[in-house]
Image (cartoon, rainbow, N blue to C red; front, side, top):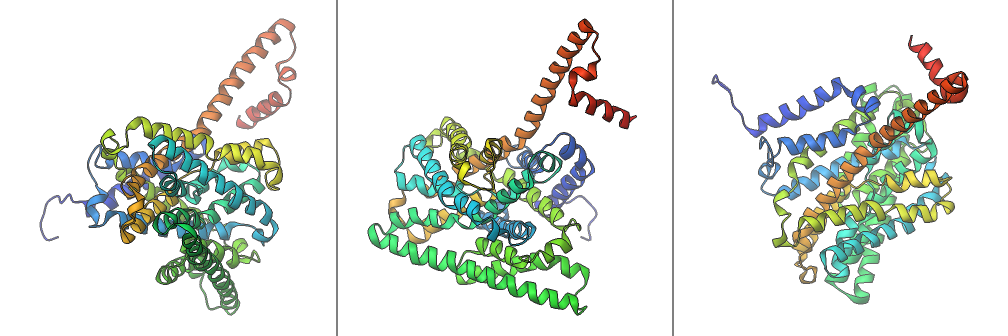
Amino acid sequence: MGEIGIHVEQPQLVPALVGGFVLILGHCSLITKERLFLSETLLAMVYGIVIGPSVLKWINPVEWSSNDLQLTQEFSRYCLAIEVMIAGVTLPKRYLQTEWISLLMLLLPVMTVMWIISGSIVKVTFDMPFLQALAIGACVAPTDPVLANAILKGMFAETHVPLRLRNILTAESGANDGLGYPFLFFALYLMRIGGGSAIGTWLYATWAYQIILSIAIGAVTGYIARKTLRYAEAAGWVDKESFLLSSIMLALTLVGVCTIIGTDDILCCFVAGNSFTWDDWFRVETEDTGLQEVLNGFLSMSFFMYFGASIPWSAYTSANMLAPWRIVVTVIAIMVIRRLPIIMALYKIIPAIKNWQDALFAGWFGPIGVSAIFYAVETIKQIEEHSDSNAGRVAEIVYPIVCSIVFGSVLVHGVTIPLVLMGKRVKTGFSISAVSLRTQATNTPLTEKLGWFGKRRQNTDKDDR
């Protein structure tokens, strides 16, 4: 300041570009979300690619920090923590107790198969040892709460997807993000230690310390936070703004505490969210405020703009085993067979998934996003800290591979609903044309030929007039 002129540097460009995008998209949000059914995360990712170093070169996240991967992991960590807290808070009363069978099936057999299939695809495509491939497969095994929330909210989901299915997919995406650690460290410990010692270390260091301890911390802190907030609200000590932000502040607190003691902060936040709203009081009090939807929208768009600008396009060359054809084959195979076949095979023993249509939706919409980026960076950090000689080139190739899979997931899941609706409209148009031709030949009223659809369309037209 103090000098007249234009100063174009990244610290000034970033808020202008991010804020401008969110502002403009907000002005046409009903068109993009309710009419075109376009995913905000897809638009944000494309925008990030355009303004990033590969196209316009306006911003380059690699230059923001001396350790850009650490910045990426911390960004993804806080984004995930807040998202899984929101997921836990938005679930109905005592949800984990009432739907424990469905959730257990999705978290154990289904997620295990997703991990093994993802690892197998990576092994075959990149011709690498199975343990190394399993470490990469662990990064993309969890479904993502940020992308899942974009799919499970809005007019399309509320109109076409049953509430019970939306709830179980929300719970799954919140819980399995924290459960990515056992799958990742199973492969890492076997590469690092090997044999029975690796299994023993995995059981006490991962399952006992990271998983069970984080669940206990989350349950206790969520309970205490709920009781103290209810007492403060009844006593008239807390204002509306602080009341609404209490769950978010709880998430940030738990991230700090769990990171300090080295336990699973993501799973802890999800469990705390469920415990915090166990009696449904906080959820009912806040469900009409719109705060959680606003936070979710801003977080998801901000992160995927960052991600779009951070995709390492230069890494995809044959010289480092990341030839484009390998990437394309991996992305397509994981999108198609990572989740859908196992859900279709097991849906009859998952109570929350009632029929094959539910299974088809649940199997296809298992997005890969922020959590995959988080675990990819964690994999690199673990290998470099312990100098794992048996890890081969995992540290070098895991991040580009995972980024390509996340890119594919955002793209594919972001355009699925618009394409399905477009196909339905085309089919309906052909059906109406055929009925019209037959009507002219038989002189039968068109509404009788169209049945319920015709009557509904006619009534809608009257309402429009």
